[in-house]
Image (cartoon, rainbow, N blue to C red; front, side, top):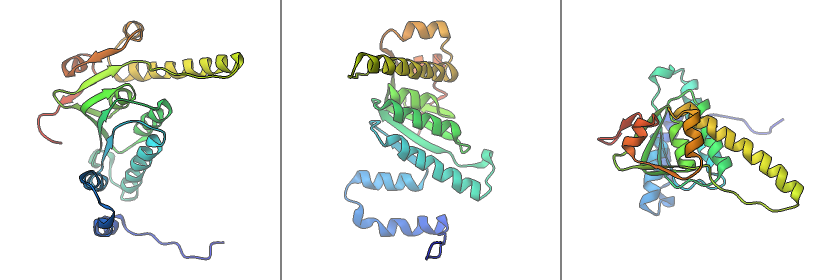
Length: 212
């Protein structure tokens, strides 16, 4: 049995005292932006490195728990906004973010500010509502990988990686109006899209004309 008494700090109280107590840790303008975003349901996705997925999952989980504990109806919940300027990166972390978005009862808005490439693209298209700055750009490709080991280990990895590629295909078909036949064509190469093409392909819901 624990030899301490558990207690909870109301989030509203925490949000009031937090900025006052982290001033010593704020060293750059980016620190200020990150703190403001954290308190206003905004998170920024740049390079998707190992650990990015769990961090964003924790952020989404936190606000879902807050909304659940306050019995806020889903249709009245303030959305969580993921601002994306990402060239992609770790596939496993990308899948973590995708799954977290899909599991979220609280609405998730994805906003493409600059580039949404590779993992950034797959994350963007999974938003419950998807916004793009007028000059944002998008890159679809299945990515690349490398591995070593014995021939058997390589064959096992190749089979597993193919299953992951099939999962990526399902993500694209579910969240765009790209058909299975169209997917077979675009997966052969890097495919770039501007905002107009993104609207045509059904993965942009709205173009940002003022800050949201």
